[in-house]
Image (cartoon, rainbow, N blue to C red; front, side):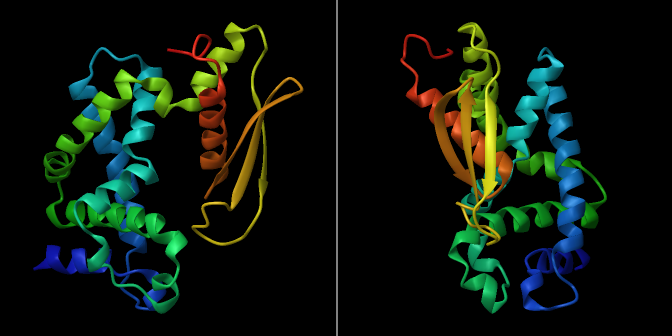
Length: 215
C-alpha cells in the first residue's frame, strides 16, 4: 500500500497545487538513478575507461532517455497535471522525464533497495549501452567535434549560446552556434544550454565531408 501511495505521488505534478506531489521523489530519483547507472556500468562494462564510463552514464541518465522510457511504459496517460501543464505541449518530454525520475524515487523509497531498480532498468540500459558504444560520436557529439577539429589542426570548438525565451520546456529556449576559429560550423536549439550546444555539435558533425568526419 505504501508503495502504491508513493507511485501516486510520483505521478502528481506540482502544477496541480497539491501538497503531496512529485518534487521530492524526483529529487531522490535523480540520486538513485545515477548510483544505479554507475553500478550497472561497473557490472556490465568492467573494462571501460573512466572517461568512457562517464560518457555512457550521461546517456543512461539523460532527460531524453528518461522521457523515452516514460513513453515506452505509457506513463503519460497516468500523469496528474494541472491545467497549465496540460496545455503546455512543448513541455511534454520534460514532464515525462520528471515523472519517470520520480517513479524511480518512489520505487526505491518503497522497497529500500536498488535491486528493483536494477531489474527494471537493466534491459533498457543494455539496449542503450550497445547503441552508444557502437557509435559513440553519435551520442557524444561535442567530443566527436572536438576530436575532428584537433585532428585538422584547427584548435578547440567554441560555443556561443543565448537564451531566446523563458518558456519552461520550450525546445527553442536556447540557441547555440559552434565556431572553429572564425568559421561558423552550425547552430542548434534546445531546452537547456547543454542541449542547444549538443545539437549544434551534432549539426556540425553532420555537415562535415564523410571522408573527414570522425568514425
